[in-house]
Length: 127
Image (tube, rainbow, N blue to C red):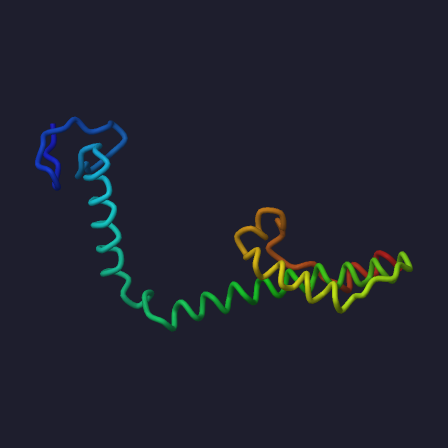
């Protein structure tokens, strides 16, 4: 038996928990989670400044831009190969907006590669 740090009631912890701190009530689990987040923030003060978040945002935007450029290059090469007529600049503007609104997490669900496609390889395979 252990005493909950938050409501001080005795409880039997699950076997998987090495150092039980809170009983299984939703309120105590929420308080435990907040306490964990607070201690993490105290240990990682340097990661919670404005500059860190700006760097991470810029990194995500760069990843999206690399993926977008790879896809657009493939479409451009495909259009040339098939001889189809599309308003490429209009398509590029709409597709760019779509990809940035989609975000990197959603993109990664269907774009498995860590490395963007190399557009030169695509052109070599088609020609």
